[in-house]
Image (tube, rainbow, N blue to C red; front, side):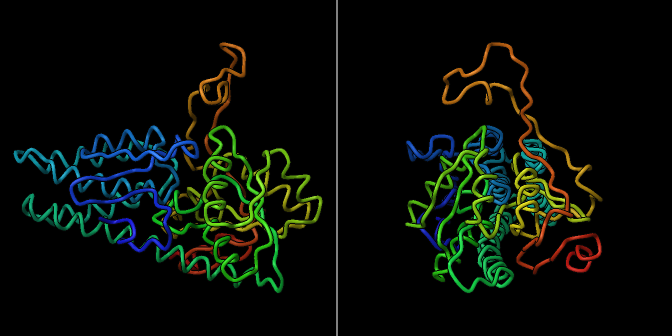
Length: 351
């Protein structure tokens, strides 16, 4: 089994690998119900990613890697190569914005092309997926150290975060939430303000659940309260994750991140993006090149199946927005930090 075996440092995990199946914690049901979905086919993994059983860019990449392993393990034995190739294509189409998905699949495809038999492919693909999982956790720990060095707090501070970037969104520990964990471990955290994060409410359902579970002081707030919190002077940093970072340092992250960056700049609050280097896409020049996923308007018109808006009202429901590099104080990855990001700094770290 891979959960703790992949290097996770706590009890909270998004996925567990058992060799012949993948178990995914259904994040749509949290915090009310902790339900695990067991999948044995790559097509089931694709559906779980599309339907947001699993979410968070790093976790999506890891899950897709295990999906490729399942494609090999349960290939029919005839044209097994074609089956695995089709599974990779299907997985690549599950979500369009998070570049970690494509990065992980490219690694799996590179391994697959060097295999001469189904048995060899299954063994090597599984080893690569586990390696991707382990690397993610190690990277999260490194990012936490880099970020605390940038922040350099002498006394406990309060921070604000958006969406969920913790163990549920990664292989374990977390990106932005990993930094918050590290501050707490070092007795440098006074409080976390967690945006509820409409429309999927990842902040209230997932981030607040993770932090409360680990006894980390958290205050949940509606997204619209972020300005008032910053104006009060209580918050020193806004810390968020990323789904894709372009060559000039623009960042695509959960919808609402851009407005937080504008508010942070106005209130002289630090704005930090924490993400693995697999999130960096140097092939895209600016954030304007990032494909932004839009989802069904029902997600906004309803909450928990209860209708809150008139039938048929038009809805604008982008999953992500793009924060310009000019509003970001630091991008933190496991490879290091880009302060006041621009294309020169990005190229220096991510050649």
